[in-house]
Amino acid sequence: MTEVHVRPTPTATTLSALADEVPPVQHRRSPWPDRRRSALKHAGLIALCVLMLYPLIWLLVSSFKPTELIFRDVSLIPSEIDMTNYSVGWNALQYPFGRYLMNSAIIVLGSLLGNLVACSMAAYAFARLEFRGRKLWFAVMLMSIMLPIHVIIVPQYVLFSKLDWINTFLPLIVPKLLATDAFFIFLMVQFFRGIPKELDEAARLDGCGHGRIYLRIMLPLSLPALATTAIFTFIWTWNDFFSQLIFLIRPDMYTAPVALRTFMDSTGASSWGPMFAMSIVSLIPVFLAFLFGQKYLVKGIATTGIK
Image 1: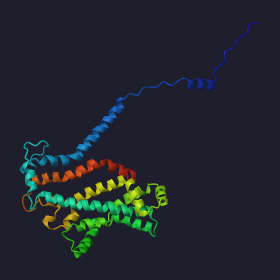
Image 2 (image 1 turned 60 degrees about the vertical axis):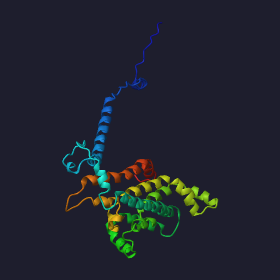
Image 3 (image 1 turned 180 degrees about the vertical axis):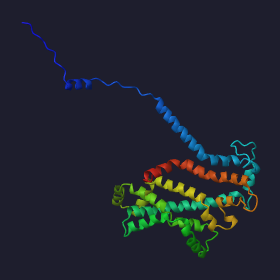
Image 4 (image 1 turned 90 degrees about the vertical axis):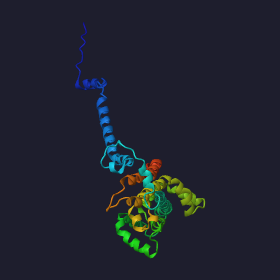
């Protein structure tokens, strides 16, 4: 008797299993759309960079042009190069421009020392010490950031005038020694809070007090925050114009921003060429500070939680 073998009919479940076993056909994606998108992105960034740097480039090019051609020839390639703007601008005012740069350097160094020492000590107190009303005083400190300088400049002028500090560098340096920059206190408080408290406890077991913990543990570990404070203080103090114009009246006490303003004359001809040349000279310290401190600046802002 002959056996008949019947082939089973595949069911839906069997077909689904077979379909899962067959590898899907992978369509290779063309790299051209990604490259085109990347090229457009880079072109846009380059265009924005050129747009942002154009005023600075125009200022640099104009410093090498004669004064009468600065606003007549607006091209970035000067048809005539005049190097006398730098020599004339350096000696155009009552004192050589180097004196004004020195005055700015004195104020910047005093402000740097004050902010680094006073603000770091205040930040350590808010971050590590337990005292009555700590949260309240921290909130008051943060609220002081919202006060514009125009609100407090009149009481400050009256106070410093009674102390006979007008026409001295004291009104611009002494407040920094009293931790008046709340922004830097807040920045370093955020950094100190990220340092493990176990380090403090281990130091106390070794007999360290708050002073040695602050000097030997907190400050060495907070180098990025200190560098960020130093860079911001340098740039803001060097470029400050309003406060220095209010408290410094004598020409021998002028700083670089105030001295640059004296090149302009609303009743006569302004010395645009020498002023542009000295503007470039005064921008060099700021450029160098940002160039060499950029790594610490980015690291300090990223590690303190300020985005």
